[in-house]
Image (tube, rainbow, N blue to C red):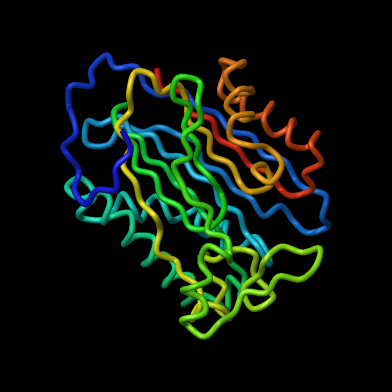
Length: 270
């Protein structure tokens, strides 16, 4: 069950003996001469007697600094929101916007580049709060079929907003659509030079995890450009160990001629 909701329906504290999620990640540097611009988070913690899984993919552009800043701060900022345990959807959205404001205030240190983000917070292996800005993606495997949980914020999908703010989307022969001929995503953290015409407010969803939900894949666009959702699900189903599954998926994308940085997280529920 996928819901766009404003308030949490309540979290069970009867988690003693509950099997925590299993998870793993794998990253691969692309073929460009620049430094690696992807970061991944894959960890679990106990917070207020809840088993909490923290998972994220950050894909930087025009440098790795903004993505690295998100890697250090975004999930912490979400959990530190006073409303997280009562209204997690709003807490996630507010943390995204507040983190972006902090990035813009530190442009002298972080530069004028930017980053996309997809974050997932799993609570007690029962519910997951999924949010994204940009074109990294989260895909759920439910009974062997993919359920895409996020929307790719490419410039064409954000065109109406960009034009309303005075920007434009250009599509040149042999190239992808770009905001003002520059940015290949329609929402992003940072990117100070384009901030007046691009958004940073995330799409946020609550997923109630069912017994038929097998695993979740998070990955940067370097993977999704060459691997469709069903193929990704089929590949991961063959490998029980989450880290090995993430690695196999990344290596398959490289075989499909992906030249971009690639990061992937696999989360198994049951």
